[in-house]
Image 1 (cartoon, rainbow, N blue to C red):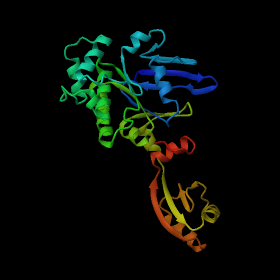
Image 2 (image 1 turned 90 degrees about the vertical axis):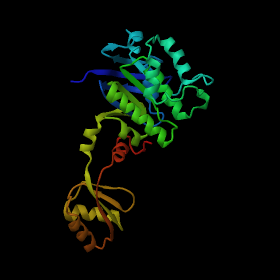
Image 3 (image 1 turned 45 degrees about the horizontal axis):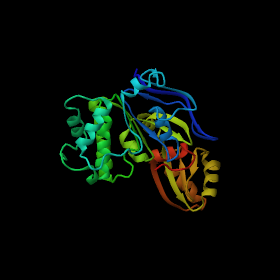
Image 4 (image 1 turned 30 degrees about the vertical axis):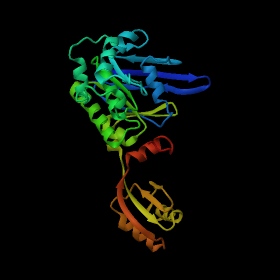
Amino acid sequence: MMTAIIQTTRLTKKYGGQIAVNDLNMTVKQGQIYGFLGQNGAGKTTTIRMLLGLIKPTSGTIEMFGEHLYDKQREILRRVGSIVEFSGFYENLTARENLMINASLVGVHTKNAIDEALEIVGLQGEPSKKVEKFSLGMKQRLGIARAILHHPELLILDEPTNGLDPIGIKEIRNMIKSLAEERKITILVSSHILSEVELLADHIGIIHLGKLLEEVSFTELRQRNRKFLEFQVSNDNRAVMLLEQHLAITDYEVRDEGIIRVYSHIGQQGKINKMLVDHQIEVTRIALSEDKLEDYFVRMIGGDKIG
């Protein structure tokens, strides 16, 4: 059984009368890449700032590595690396010079720590380039180098691919996967981009309007995906009435106008089509498909798309 690295219980943060995070029960287990998924403003950054001791919760508890965060905050956070929003660098210095300053601040004196961090993020080939000349993707990689200088056991990354182009996103994604697989770092990564979380994480927590709606593994999610027959018809209202009356079909969903998904009777599309045509319903398309993860998330958050 995997150990819980992060465990929150009824974690709540209020600003005046506004609830930013509401009774959040989150569990991040050792070795996971946990995708913290939600729209902008859902409560992701507020949660992360509480986990890092940057703001205090209104109520609820946070345990990390089996200890209450506020009992042993200094000792616990020494075991954590993070990027929250985007913190700046000294633009007139090189990557190495920036990391030397950071190493002295966090008490890292290992001889090869800076070289190792730069190599991990692919910046070892830029020894004299000033940070002001770095692309956004290079700055994000330098941020990760700074976060892993002290060999953390847990890495917390808030929207690490925000604003990057597709190549930069892929570089950060591969780097995060490598840190989890090769260095056995547990990683919590927040994002509002569903497709990116799907490519990166093995577990997810979905947050919406401050509430954690579900925690689930992607393996389980894919097993839940349902196959369906999709019909494009000339009259969806009359078609669903006929489905119910003539074939006792009740497990269906009307999507966009004229589009019906039937979740039962897989393999009986010919029979369904014949019945509809016999009753003067024009069928212009039939397809066998399965739920996309996007459909699942849209249902979970009540119709608003993520990403």
